[in-house]
Length: 505
Ligand code: AHR
Image (cartoon, rainbow, N blue to C red; front, side, top):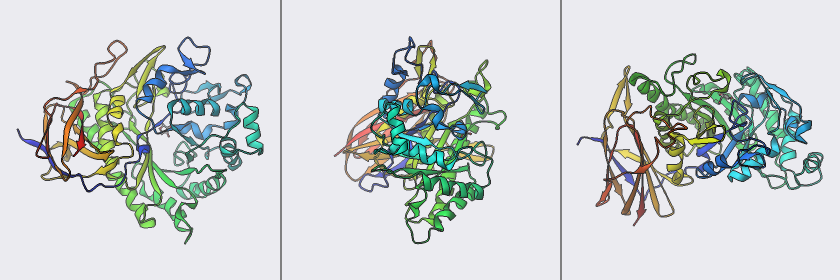
Protein backbone atom coordinates (compact mmCIF):
# COMPACT_ATOMS: atom_id res chain seq x y z
CA UNK A 1 0.00 0.00 0.00
CA UNK A 2 1.17 3.57 -0.61
CA UNK A 3 2.95 5.01 2.37
CA UNK A 4 1.28 8.08 3.76
CA UNK A 5 4.13 8.72 6.17
CA UNK A 6 7.69 7.49 5.68
CA UNK A 7 9.93 8.90 8.41
CA UNK A 8 12.99 8.49 10.60
CA UNK A 9 13.22 8.86 14.37
CA UNK A 10 16.70 8.94 15.90
CA UNK A 11 16.21 7.35 19.30
CA UNK A 12 19.61 8.47 20.52
CA UNK A 13 19.17 12.14 19.59
CA UNK A 14 16.53 13.50 21.95
CA UNK A 15 15.28 17.06 21.62
CA UNK A 16 13.93 19.39 24.31
CA UNK A 17 11.77 18.13 27.16
CA UNK A 18 8.03 18.24 26.53
CA UNK A 19 6.81 20.05 29.64
CA UNK A 20 3.90 18.23 31.21
CA UNK A 21 2.33 21.69 31.52
CA UNK A 22 1.59 21.58 27.79
CA UNK A 23 -1.23 19.24 28.82
CA UNK A 24 -2.87 21.80 31.13
CA UNK A 25 -6.59 22.48 31.48
CA UNK A 26 -8.87 25.43 32.10
CA UNK A 27 -11.96 25.88 34.27
CA UNK A 28 -13.83 29.18 34.04
CA UNK A 29 -16.92 30.44 35.78
CA UNK A 30 -18.76 29.97 32.53
CA UNK A 31 -21.94 28.02 31.89
CA UNK A 32 -21.84 24.62 33.58
CA UNK A 33 -18.09 24.23 33.92
CA UNK A 34 -17.48 25.20 37.55
CA UNK A 35 -21.09 24.94 38.74
CA UNK A 36 -22.53 21.48 37.96
CA UNK A 37 -19.30 20.39 36.24
CA UNK A 38 -17.02 20.47 39.26
CA UNK A 39 -19.06 21.97 42.06
CA UNK A 40 -22.37 20.59 43.24
CA UNK A 41 -22.18 21.66 46.90
CA UNK A 42 -21.95 19.48 49.95
CA UNK A 43 -25.72 18.97 50.19
CA UNK A 44 -26.02 17.52 46.70
CA UNK A 45 -27.25 13.96 46.07
CA UNK A 46 -24.42 13.67 43.56
CA UNK A 47 -21.48 12.04 45.38
CA UNK A 48 -18.98 14.70 46.30
CA UNK A 49 -16.05 15.54 48.53
CA UNK A 50 -16.63 18.88 50.21
CA UNK A 51 -18.96 19.87 47.35
CA UNK A 52 -16.68 18.72 44.50
CA UNK A 53 -18.03 15.90 42.28
CA UNK A 54 -16.32 12.59 42.92
CA UNK A 55 -16.96 11.14 39.43
CA UNK A 56 -15.40 14.12 37.70
CA UNK A 57 -12.33 14.08 39.94
CA UNK A 58 -11.87 10.33 39.49
CA UNK A 59 -12.11 10.61 35.71
CA UNK A 60 -9.74 13.56 35.48
CA UNK A 61 -7.16 11.85 37.65
CA UNK A 62 -6.68 9.43 34.72
CA UNK A 63 -5.32 12.39 32.74
CA UNK A 64 -2.73 13.39 35.36
CA UNK A 65 -3.74 17.00 34.79
CA UNK A 66 -0.54 19.00 35.36
CA UNK A 67 -2.13 22.41 35.94
CA UNK A 68 -5.58 23.94 36.02
CA UNK A 69 -6.27 27.56 35.05
CA UNK A 70 -9.00 29.43 36.96
CA UNK A 71 -11.25 31.53 37.34
CA UNK A 72 -11.15 32.73 33.70
CA UNK A 73 -10.96 33.70 30.87
CA UNK A 74 -12.99 36.83 30.52
CA UNK A 75 -14.53 36.12 33.93
CA UNK A 76 -11.15 36.63 35.60
CA UNK A 77 -11.17 40.31 34.70
CA UNK A 78 -14.48 40.82 36.51
CA UNK A 79 -13.51 38.68 39.50
CA UNK A 80 -12.70 40.23 42.85
CA UNK A 81 -11.22 37.42 44.89
CA UNK A 82 -12.44 38.66 48.28
CA UNK A 83 -16.02 37.96 47.08
CA UNK A 84 -15.12 34.27 47.10
CA UNK A 85 -13.58 33.77 50.56
CA UNK A 86 -15.08 33.53 54.02
CA UNK A 87 -18.37 31.89 55.05
CA UNK A 88 -20.32 31.00 51.90
CA UNK A 89 -23.53 32.50 53.25
CA UNK A 90 -21.84 35.89 53.62
CA UNK A 91 -20.37 35.99 50.15
CA UNK A 92 -21.83 38.65 47.87
CA UNK A 93 -23.64 37.80 44.67
CA UNK A 94 -22.46 39.27 41.41
CA UNK A 95 -23.63 39.13 37.81
CA UNK A 96 -21.52 37.11 35.40
CA UNK A 97 -21.73 39.75 32.71
CA UNK A 98 -19.61 37.91 30.17
CA UNK A 99 -21.25 34.54 30.32
CA UNK A 100 -25.01 34.21 30.21
CA UNK A 101 -25.70 37.28 32.39
CA UNK A 102 -26.47 34.93 35.27
CA UNK A 103 -26.10 35.50 39.00
CA UNK A 104 -22.92 34.10 40.48
CA UNK A 105 -23.18 33.35 44.20
CA UNK A 106 -19.44 32.95 44.75
CA UNK A 107 -19.90 29.63 46.53
CA UNK A 108 -16.89 28.35 44.59
CA UNK A 109 -13.96 30.58 45.49
CA UNK A 110 -10.28 30.40 46.31
CA UNK A 111 -10.48 27.72 49.03
CA UNK A 112 -12.75 25.52 46.92
CA UNK A 113 -10.49 25.86 43.89
CA UNK A 114 -7.39 24.98 45.88
CA UNK A 115 -9.23 21.96 47.35
CA UNK A 116 -10.07 20.89 43.79
CA UNK A 117 -6.40 21.18 42.81
CA UNK A 118 -5.46 19.03 45.81
CA UNK A 119 -8.00 16.37 44.82
CA UNK A 120 -6.74 16.35 41.23
CA UNK A 121 -3.09 16.48 42.28
CA UNK A 122 -2.64 19.42 39.94
CA UNK A 123 -0.75 22.71 40.04
CA UNK A 124 -2.94 25.81 40.32
CA UNK A 125 -2.80 28.44 37.61
CA UNK A 126 -4.60 31.50 38.96
CA UNK A 127 -5.62 34.25 36.56
CA UNK A 128 -5.37 37.69 38.14
CA UNK A 129 -7.71 40.59 37.41
CA UNK A 130 -5.98 43.35 35.49
CA UNK A 131 -9.04 44.54 33.53
CA UNK A 132 -11.10 45.79 36.48
CA UNK A 133 -9.02 44.91 39.53
CA UNK A 134 -6.42 46.92 41.38
CA UNK A 135 -2.74 46.25 41.82
CA UNK A 136 -3.45 45.99 45.56
CA UNK A 137 -5.98 43.18 44.92
CA UNK A 138 -3.34 41.29 42.99
CA UNK A 139 -0.77 41.80 45.76
CA UNK A 140 -3.23 40.76 48.47
CA UNK A 141 -4.46 37.66 46.65
CA UNK A 142 -0.96 36.34 46.14
CA UNK A 143 -0.13 37.09 49.80
CA UNK A 144 -3.35 35.38 50.92
CA UNK A 145 -2.52 32.29 48.91
CA UNK A 146 1.17 31.87 49.52
CA UNK A 147 2.36 33.65 52.68
CA UNK A 148 3.11 31.65 55.81
CA UNK A 149 3.74 34.10 58.66
CA UNK A 150 1.21 36.32 60.42
CA UNK A 151 0.96 38.94 57.68
CA UNK A 152 -2.48 40.56 57.27
CA UNK A 153 -3.51 38.31 54.39
CA UNK A 154 -2.11 35.15 55.99
CA UNK A 155 -4.16 35.96 59.10
CA UNK A 156 -7.27 36.47 57.02
CA UNK A 157 -6.72 33.09 55.37
CA UNK A 158 -6.41 31.48 58.80
CA UNK A 159 -9.64 33.13 59.92
CA UNK A 160 -11.20 31.41 56.92
CA UNK A 161 -9.96 28.03 58.06
CA UNK A 162 -6.70 27.44 56.24
CA UNK A 163 -3.56 27.53 58.33
CA UNK A 164 -0.78 26.64 55.89
CA UNK A 165 -0.14 28.65 52.73
CA UNK A 166 -0.74 26.92 49.44
CA UNK A 167 1.83 26.47 46.73
CA UNK A 168 0.83 28.40 43.61
CA UNK A 169 2.71 27.63 40.44
CA UNK A 170 1.34 29.97 37.79
CA UNK A 171 -0.20 33.43 38.07
CA UNK A 172 -1.81 35.08 35.05
CA UNK A 173 -1.32 38.80 34.58
CA UNK A 174 -4.62 39.56 32.84
CA UNK A 175 -6.53 37.78 30.11
CA UNK A 176 -7.23 38.89 26.54
CA UNK A 177 -6.55 42.54 27.46
CA UNK A 178 -7.06 43.50 23.81
CA UNK A 179 -10.71 42.35 24.17
CA UNK A 180 -12.82 41.34 27.16
CA UNK A 181 -9.95 42.07 29.53
CA UNK A 182 -10.22 45.84 29.12
CA UNK A 183 -10.01 46.64 25.39
CA UNK A 184 -6.51 47.92 25.96
CA UNK A 185 -3.81 48.79 23.50
CA UNK A 186 -0.64 46.72 23.75
CA UNK A 187 1.38 49.58 25.24
CA UNK A 188 -1.35 50.36 27.78
CA UNK A 189 -1.51 46.76 28.87
CA UNK A 190 2.27 46.47 29.01
CA UNK A 191 2.39 49.32 31.56
CA UNK A 192 -0.37 47.82 33.67
CA UNK A 193 1.14 44.35 33.45
CA UNK A 194 4.49 45.66 34.71
CA UNK A 195 2.75 46.98 37.83
CA UNK A 196 0.68 43.87 38.52
CA UNK A 197 3.63 41.57 37.90
CA UNK A 198 5.79 43.59 40.27
CA UNK A 199 3.29 43.30 43.12
CA UNK A 200 2.50 39.63 42.48
CA UNK A 201 5.40 38.86 44.78
CA UNK A 202 7.12 35.65 45.71
CA UNK A 203 6.44 34.90 49.39
CA UNK A 204 8.48 32.44 51.42
CA UNK A 205 9.60 29.58 49.21
CA UNK A 206 6.83 30.00 46.64
CA UNK A 207 8.09 30.93 43.18
CA UNK A 208 5.40 32.18 40.85
CA UNK A 209 5.57 31.77 37.12
CA UNK A 210 3.88 35.00 36.01
CA UNK A 211 2.19 34.72 32.64
CA UNK A 212 1.70 38.05 30.84
CA UNK A 213 -1.55 37.95 28.86
CA UNK A 214 -0.76 37.85 25.23
CA UNK A 215 -1.90 37.94 21.68
CA UNK A 216 -4.87 36.70 19.79
CA UNK A 217 -3.77 34.23 17.13
CA UNK A 218 -0.89 35.67 15.07
CA UNK A 219 -0.81 39.19 16.50
CA UNK A 220 2.97 39.11 16.76
CA UNK A 221 3.09 42.87 17.43
CA UNK A 222 1.49 42.21 20.82
CA UNK A 223 4.19 39.70 21.71
CA UNK A 224 6.81 42.17 20.52
CA UNK A 225 5.45 44.86 22.84
CA UNK A 226 5.65 42.49 25.81
CA UNK A 227 9.14 41.37 24.90
CA UNK A 228 10.26 45.00 24.59
CA UNK A 229 9.46 45.42 28.30
CA UNK A 230 11.80 42.55 29.03
CA UNK A 231 14.49 44.09 26.81
CA UNK A 232 14.22 47.33 28.82
CA UNK A 233 15.55 45.44 31.81
CA UNK A 234 18.97 45.65 30.18
CA UNK A 235 21.46 43.35 31.82
CA UNK A 236 19.01 42.14 34.45
CA UNK A 237 17.53 38.66 34.21
CA UNK A 238 14.84 38.74 31.51
CA UNK A 239 12.61 36.80 33.88
CA UNK A 240 12.45 39.65 36.40
CA UNK A 241 9.06 40.93 35.21
CA UNK A 242 7.22 37.87 33.97
CA UNK A 243 8.38 34.41 33.11
CA UNK A 244 5.98 33.60 30.30
CA UNK A 245 4.07 35.36 27.56
CA UNK A 246 0.84 33.82 26.34
CA UNK A 247 -1.40 33.77 23.29
CA UNK A 248 -4.80 32.25 22.48
CA UNK A 249 -5.82 30.28 19.42
CA UNK A 250 -9.18 28.61 18.76
CA UNK A 251 -10.20 26.25 15.96
CA UNK A 252 -13.51 26.38 14.09
CA UNK A 253 -14.75 25.58 10.61
CA UNK A 254 -16.57 28.77 9.64
CA UNK A 255 -16.41 32.34 10.87
CA UNK A 256 -16.53 33.82 14.39
CA UNK A 257 -20.20 34.58 13.81
CA UNK A 258 -21.05 31.11 12.52
CA UNK A 259 -18.40 28.65 13.60
CA UNK A 260 -20.15 25.48 12.45
CA UNK A 261 -21.83 22.69 14.40
CA UNK A 262 -20.05 20.20 16.62
CA UNK A 263 -21.51 17.02 15.17
CA UNK A 264 -23.24 17.95 11.93
CA UNK A 265 -20.67 18.94 9.35
CA UNK A 266 -19.74 18.34 5.76
CA UNK A 267 -16.45 16.97 4.48
CA UNK A 268 -15.54 20.53 3.42
CA UNK A 269 -16.13 21.78 6.95
CA UNK A 270 -14.11 18.87 8.31
CA UNK A 271 -11.11 19.78 6.17
CA UNK A 272 -11.52 23.50 6.85
CA UNK A 273 -11.30 22.61 10.54
CA UNK A 274 -8.09 20.68 10.04
CA UNK A 275 -6.52 23.42 7.98
CA UNK A 276 -7.26 25.85 10.80
CA UNK A 277 -6.01 23.50 13.53
CA UNK A 278 -2.74 22.81 11.72
CA UNK A 279 -2.15 26.56 11.44
CA UNK A 280 -1.23 26.49 15.13
CA UNK A 281 2.27 25.43 14.05
CA UNK A 282 2.82 28.59 12.02
CA UNK A 283 1.55 30.73 14.86
CA UNK A 284 3.66 29.09 17.57
CA UNK A 285 6.69 29.49 15.30
CA UNK A 286 5.85 33.15 14.69
CA UNK A 287 5.59 34.06 18.39
CA UNK A 288 8.70 32.00 19.10
CA UNK A 289 10.65 33.92 16.46
CA UNK A 290 9.68 37.23 18.06
CA UNK A 291 10.75 35.93 21.47
CA UNK A 292 14.01 34.55 20.06
CA UNK A 293 14.98 38.05 18.94
CA UNK A 294 14.84 39.32 22.53
CA UNK A 295 15.60 36.17 24.47
CA UNK A 296 17.74 33.84 22.35
CA UNK A 297 18.41 31.51 25.26
CA UNK A 298 14.69 30.88 25.68
CA UNK A 299 14.66 31.84 29.34
CA UNK A 300 11.06 32.95 28.99
CA UNK A 301 8.39 30.49 28.00
CA UNK A 302 5.55 30.84 25.51
CA UNK A 303 2.13 29.80 26.81
CA UNK A 304 -0.90 28.89 24.71
CA UNK A 305 -3.24 29.20 27.65
CA UNK A 306 -6.47 28.88 25.67
CA UNK A 307 -6.89 26.58 22.70
CA UNK A 308 -9.36 24.08 21.30
CA UNK A 309 -12.45 23.83 19.14
CA UNK A 310 -15.23 26.40 19.39
CA UNK A 311 -18.54 25.45 17.74
CA UNK A 312 -22.00 26.95 17.67
CA UNK A 313 -23.74 26.03 20.93
CA UNK A 314 -25.99 22.98 21.02
CA UNK A 315 -29.66 23.57 20.25
CA UNK A 316 -31.82 24.83 23.13
CA UNK A 317 -28.86 25.71 25.32
CA UNK A 318 -27.95 29.15 26.66
CA UNK A 319 -25.80 30.85 24.00
CA UNK A 320 -23.70 32.33 26.80
CA UNK A 321 -22.87 28.91 28.22
CA UNK A 322 -20.78 27.65 25.27
CA UNK A 323 -21.95 24.06 25.64
CA UNK A 324 -20.97 21.86 22.68
CA UNK A 325 -20.73 18.17 21.88
CA UNK A 326 -17.34 16.70 21.16
CA UNK A 327 -16.73 14.33 18.26
CA UNK A 328 -13.89 12.26 16.86
CA UNK A 329 -13.02 15.38 14.81
CA UNK A 330 -12.32 17.26 18.07
CA UNK A 331 -9.96 14.54 19.26
CA UNK A 332 -7.98 14.85 16.02
CA UNK A 333 -7.80 18.63 16.41
CA UNK A 334 -6.29 17.96 19.84
CA UNK A 335 -3.73 15.45 18.61
CA UNK A 336 -2.40 17.66 15.83
CA UNK A 337 -1.97 20.36 18.47
CA UNK A 338 -0.02 17.91 20.65
CA UNK A 339 2.34 17.15 17.76
CA UNK A 340 2.93 20.87 17.21
CA UNK A 341 3.52 21.34 20.96
CA UNK A 342 6.11 18.57 21.00
CA UNK A 343 7.95 20.05 18.04
CA UNK A 344 8.06 23.49 19.71
CA UNK A 345 8.82 22.29 23.23
CA UNK A 346 11.94 24.42 23.51
CA UNK A 347 9.89 27.62 23.74
CA UNK A 348 6.32 26.48 24.34
CA UNK A 349 6.08 25.45 27.99
CA UNK A 350 2.44 25.81 28.98
CA UNK A 351 -0.88 25.17 27.26
CA UNK A 352 -4.46 24.99 28.48
CA UNK A 353 -7.29 23.50 26.49
CA UNK A 354 -10.62 25.28 26.90
CA UNK A 355 -12.38 23.97 28.95
CA UNK A 356 -12.48 20.93 31.19
CA UNK A 357 -16.17 20.16 31.71
CA UNK A 358 -19.31 21.19 29.77
CA UNK A 359 -17.72 24.18 28.00
CA UNK A 360 -16.10 24.26 24.53
CA UNK A 361 -13.72 21.33 23.88
CA UNK A 362 -14.34 19.50 27.14
CA UNK A 363 -12.91 16.34 28.56
CA UNK A 364 -16.19 15.48 30.25
CA UNK A 365 -19.87 16.27 29.80
CA UNK A 366 -22.37 16.03 32.63
CA UNK A 367 -26.14 15.87 32.83
CA UNK A 368 -27.30 15.89 36.42
CA UNK A 369 -25.65 12.89 38.05
CA UNK A 370 -24.55 11.45 34.69
CA UNK A 371 -21.10 11.98 33.25
CA UNK A 372 -19.44 10.90 30.00
CA UNK A 373 -15.91 11.06 28.66
CA UNK A 374 -15.44 12.72 25.29
CA UNK A 375 -13.14 11.57 22.47
CA UNK A 376 -10.86 14.46 23.46
CA UNK A 377 -10.59 12.96 26.95
CA UNK A 378 -9.30 9.75 25.41
CA UNK A 379 -6.79 11.61 23.23
CA UNK A 380 -5.39 13.27 26.36
CA UNK A 381 -5.28 9.98 28.28
CA UNK A 382 -3.45 8.21 25.45
CA UNK A 383 -0.89 11.04 25.30
CA UNK A 384 -0.05 11.20 29.02
CA UNK A 385 3.19 9.31 28.39
CA UNK A 386 4.58 12.41 26.66
CA UNK A 387 4.48 14.42 29.91
CA UNK A 388 8.04 15.53 30.74
CA UNK A 389 9.49 13.16 28.14
CA UNK A 390 12.31 14.14 25.79
CA UNK A 391 10.94 14.92 22.34
CA UNK A 392 12.19 12.83 19.44
CA UNK A 393 11.87 14.70 16.15
CA UNK A 394 10.05 12.80 13.39
CA UNK A 395 11.93 13.49 10.16
CA UNK A 396 10.05 12.74 6.96
CA UNK A 397 11.93 10.92 4.22
CA UNK A 398 9.37 11.75 1.62
CA UNK A 399 6.75 14.45 1.69
CA UNK A 400 3.64 13.34 3.50
CA UNK A 401 0.35 12.93 1.67
CA UNK A 402 -1.81 16.04 1.46
CA UNK A 403 -5.40 17.02 0.81
CA UNK A 404 -6.21 20.21 -1.09
CA UNK A 405 -8.34 22.60 0.94
CA UNK A 406 -9.16 25.64 -1.21
CA UNK A 407 -5.63 25.79 -2.54
CA UNK A 408 -3.88 24.88 0.72
CA UNK A 409 -2.14 21.50 0.87
CA UNK A 410 -3.18 20.06 4.24
CA UNK A 411 -1.12 17.10 5.47
CA UNK A 412 -3.30 14.08 6.02
CA UNK A 413 -1.08 12.56 8.66
CA UNK A 414 0.62 13.98 11.73
CA UNK A 415 3.13 12.35 14.05
CA UNK A 416 5.41 12.95 17.02
CA UNK A 417 7.48 10.88 19.42
CA UNK A 418 9.16 11.12 22.80
CA UNK A 419 11.22 9.03 25.15
CA UNK A 420 11.15 8.62 28.91
CA UNK A 421 12.07 5.92 31.42
CA UNK A 422 13.49 3.50 28.85
CA UNK A 423 10.42 3.66 26.62
CA UNK A 424 9.36 5.45 23.45
CA UNK A 425 5.90 6.76 22.74
CA UNK A 426 4.93 7.43 19.13
CA UNK A 427 1.74 9.36 18.32
CA UNK A 428 0.19 8.91 14.89
CA UNK A 429 -2.83 10.76 13.55
CA UNK A 430 -4.60 9.94 10.30
CA UNK A 431 -6.70 12.97 9.44
CA UNK A 432 -8.16 11.45 6.30
CA UNK A 433 -11.75 10.45 7.10
CA UNK A 434 -12.03 8.43 3.89
CA UNK A 435 -8.83 6.40 3.63
CA UNK A 436 -6.55 4.38 5.88
CA UNK A 437 -2.92 5.43 6.25
CA UNK A 438 0.16 3.25 6.02
CA UNK A 439 3.00 4.46 8.18
CA UNK A 440 6.64 3.41 8.24
CA UNK A 441 9.09 4.82 10.78
CA UNK A 442 12.74 3.90 10.80
CA UNK A 443 13.74 3.86 14.47
CA UNK A 444 17.46 4.56 14.39
CA UNK A 445 19.79 3.83 17.27
CA UNK A 446 18.82 1.68 20.18
CA UNK A 447 16.54 -1.07 19.01
CA UNK A 448 13.01 -0.71 20.26
CA UNK A 449 10.70 -3.65 20.60
CA UNK A 450 7.43 -4.96 22.01
CA UNK A 451 5.01 -2.46 20.47
CA UNK A 452 1.85 -1.86 22.46
CA UNK A 453 -0.52 -0.03 20.15
CA UNK A 454 -3.81 1.67 20.97
CA UNK A 455 -6.20 3.41 18.60
CA UNK A 456 -9.06 5.87 18.91
CA UNK A 457 -11.11 5.78 15.74
CA UNK A 458 -14.63 6.01 14.40
CA UNK A 459 -16.30 5.24 11.09
CA UNK A 460 -17.49 8.83 10.96
CA UNK A 461 -15.48 11.83 12.23
CA UNK A 462 -18.75 13.14 13.65
CA UNK A 463 -19.08 10.11 15.94
CA UNK A 464 -19.34 11.09 19.59
CA UNK A 465 -20.31 9.77 22.98
CA UNK A 466 -23.73 10.42 24.46
CA UNK A 467 -25.33 9.74 27.81
CA UNK A 468 -27.10 6.78 26.16
CA UNK A 469 -24.00 5.53 24.34
CA UNK A 470 -21.06 6.65 26.49
CA UNK A 471 -18.49 4.41 24.79
CA UNK A 472 -19.31 4.97 21.12
CA UNK A 473 -15.81 6.41 20.70
CA UNK A 474 -13.32 4.76 23.00
CA UNK A 475 -9.75 3.48 22.65
CA UNK A 476 -9.02 -0.13 21.77
CA UNK A 477 -5.92 -2.15 20.80
CA UNK A 478 -4.56 -1.56 17.29
CA UNK A 479 -3.59 -4.80 15.58
CA UNK A 480 -0.89 -5.28 13.00
CA UNK A 481 1.73 -2.90 14.34
CA UNK A 482 5.19 -4.41 13.89
CA UNK A 483 8.79 -3.51 14.61
CA UNK A 484 11.17 -5.47 12.41
CA UNK A 485 14.87 -4.64 12.25
CA UNK A 486 14.10 -1.34 13.94
CA UNK A 487 11.40 -0.37 11.46
CA UNK A 488 7.94 0.33 12.79
CA UNK A 489 5.02 -0.21 10.45
CA UNK A 490 1.37 0.47 11.14
CA UNK A 491 -1.87 0.83 9.27
CA UNK A 492 -4.18 3.46 10.70
CA UNK A 493 -7.91 3.39 10.05
CA UNK A 494 -9.53 6.56 8.62
CA UNK A 495 -9.92 9.49 11.05
CA UNK A 496 -7.85 7.87 13.75
CA UNK A 497 -5.35 8.60 16.49
CA UNK A 498 -2.97 5.86 17.55
CA UNK A 499 -0.18 5.58 20.06
CA UNK A 500 2.57 2.99 19.96
CA UNK A 501 4.60 2.36 23.07
CA UNK A 502 7.96 0.62 22.65
CA UNK A 503 10.60 -0.56 25.05
CA UNK A 504 14.14 0.58 24.32
CA UNK A 505 16.71 -2.15 23.83
O1 AHR B 1 -12.85 30.10 26.80
C1 AHR B 1 -13.89 31.00 26.57
C2 AHR B 1 -13.41 32.44 26.41
O2 AHR B 1 -12.63 32.55 25.28
C3 AHR B 1 -12.53 32.97 27.50
O3 AHR B 1 -13.22 33.44 28.60
C4 AHR B 1 -11.83 34.09 26.81
O4 AHR B 1 -10.56 34.35 27.36
C5 AHR B 1 -11.78 33.65 25.37
O5 AHR B 1 -12.22 34.63 24.51
